[in-house]
Length: 68
Image (cartoon, rainbow, N blue to C red; front, side, top):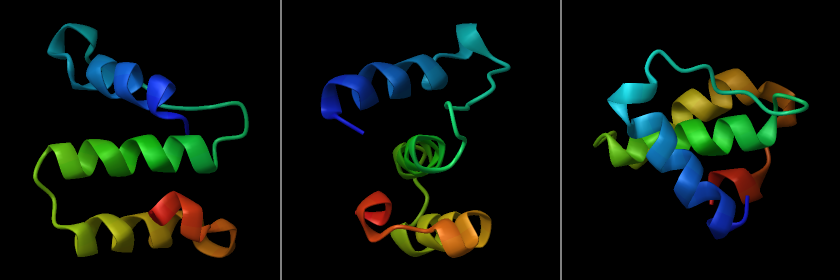
């Protein structure tokens, strides 16, 4: 996900005025998981916990580029 897309998206989901919020993308795989991972880290989650959650839900569709 390009930075120019990620930053405004992260700001939107972190803004309580937009809650509740549903995060999804066209295919619901990589951009969704990347944004949720960024949200977890912004909320103070440990990197290991964030990656563990990503792997649990991504399963066989996990990509190293998303983890980075």
